[in-house]
Length: 57
Image 1 (spheres, helix red, strand yellow):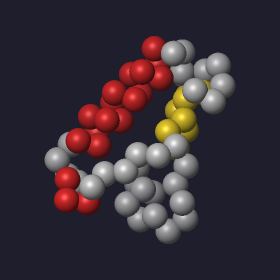
Image 2 (cartoon, rainbow, N blue to C red):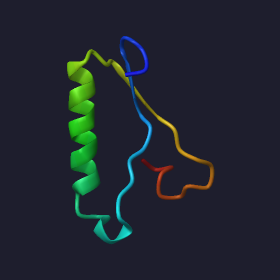
Image 3 (cartoon, one colour):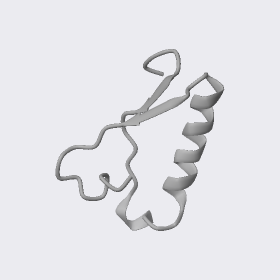
Image 4 (cartoon, rainbow, N blue to C red):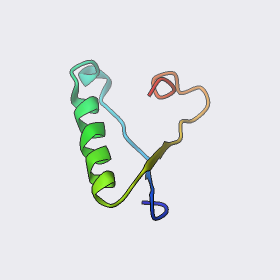
């Protein structure tokens, strides 16, 4: 949590071999649920310029 009602994901990487299996989606769902339990009403993600896998996320 970066503020009372704001959660942020700083790092979430998947092994390229495991992409497309739904593992990342399940991790995101779990992180989101936990942040909501802590009172998050917003969730922020930063992606480095040129990170073609992270930008759609």
